Amino acid sequence: MRTWLTALTVIAATLGAAPALALDPPAAGDLFGTRSLAMGNAFRAVGTSNDTLFFNPAGLVATRRYEIDGHYGFSPGERLGLWHASIVDSKTANVGVGIGYSHLSGKGALGESNGSLVHLGLGIPLASRVAFGVGFKYLGFTRPEDTNSVTADLGLLVRPVPFLSLGLVAYNVIDVGSEQAPMRAGGGVSIGSDASFRLSFDAVFALEERDPFGTTYHLGGELFFDDVLPIRLGAERREKEDRNFLTAGLGLVSEVAALEASFAQGVGGGHSDERIFGFALKLFL
Image 1 (cartoon, helix red, strand yellow):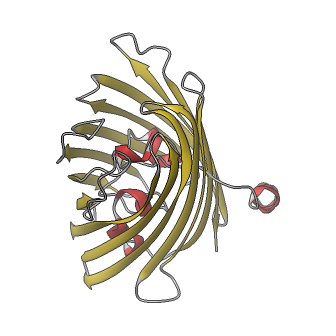
Image 2 (tube, one colour; image 1 turned 120 degrees about the horizontal axis):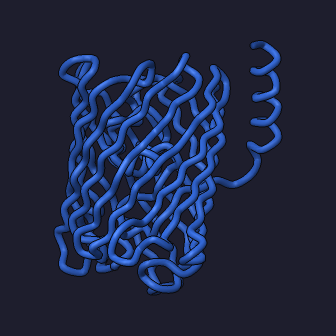
Image 3 (cartoon, rainbow, N blue to C red; image 1 turned 180 degrees about the vertical axis):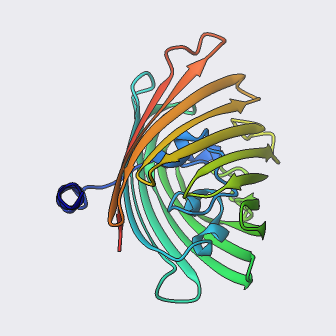
């Protein structure tokens, strides 16, 4: 066991300098992390990994951690790729702070895409079971439209009992008049924990006609074996596009690092050639 942990640590140290990723055009409100992608992006009430920086900033303080994530995701059919790196620290202070950088390029659902995003999030505990979060986003894109703007997300996470989490979030509350950042609102419920199993459901509602994805629904679950091997399944529905995805993923987790892989497959309506792959390396300090 110690040899296995040492090997995983060496791999993490070797690859940790590489940039990271998640996936899909930012207008979706979902810069997919590998774990969240495998769970159908049903992540607004989870808050226990760096993916929460993009889904609900209140989750930055949901668990005490110092985590560095690197992700890469790509869609072969759309020739779309995204690198992403993030750091979250809720261990050294009473609040949670996260920063992430993402670069997206290729041909996506909105056409040709090229640009970067910077996320800065803050999670504040309001009570022992309630947290509030705010996330600021800088969008610097040359395609599909020239965008240089700053907007923000607001989130709330409530845990009335240890095995139940409720999340509410508003995206892009500063209207910057861009299809890259439409105003949206959503919420989710999650049952379980990272030590055993988790089942989550989210719904996100479009508040503007220009939103390219419309209302979206997300369902996901994960099951942990011996605290080191999570298996994940999920589904996502995008109403406006009439697109559906089935998702799956695996992980290998230790006390110091984790390796994860995920896959999303378009189903129905001629979308069988739509596939998304995601890979992640995580370090826990």
